[in-house]
Amino acid sequence: MASTGLDAIREAAEARYGNLDIDMGDGSTVTLLNALRLPEARRDRLASLQDSLSDGDIAVADQIGALREMVGLVAATKGQGRRLLEAIGEDVPALLTVLEQYGQGSELGEA
Image 1 (cartoon, one colour):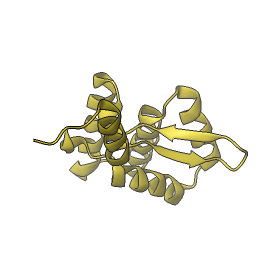
Image 2: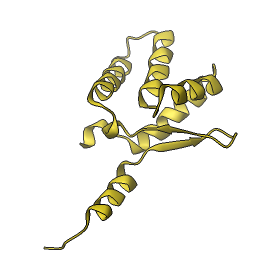
Image 3: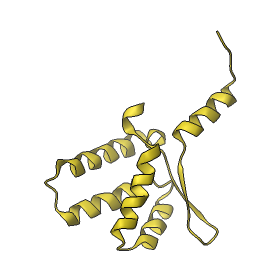
């Protein structure tokens, strides 16, 4: 059997389950944590929001609210989530694009 080191395992995990870093254009970065790296309560709430959005019986305003809450849940800090949401403002396509890019590297079911 092959052998490896813990550092190599951590590097492989980071490559596969890394965070999404968003350059804010002012020299700062907002980090969205991979869902698998979230504390259990935040991960459960994220899954609940995803389920509510897939139901299809949710009002548009509630959908946007859920999407905004999702950004807040996955941001590395509340301050980062707030900054990103303030920068996005009412630009729903930008909000959707952030979450689509986030979703490409963060799948709850892969644990």
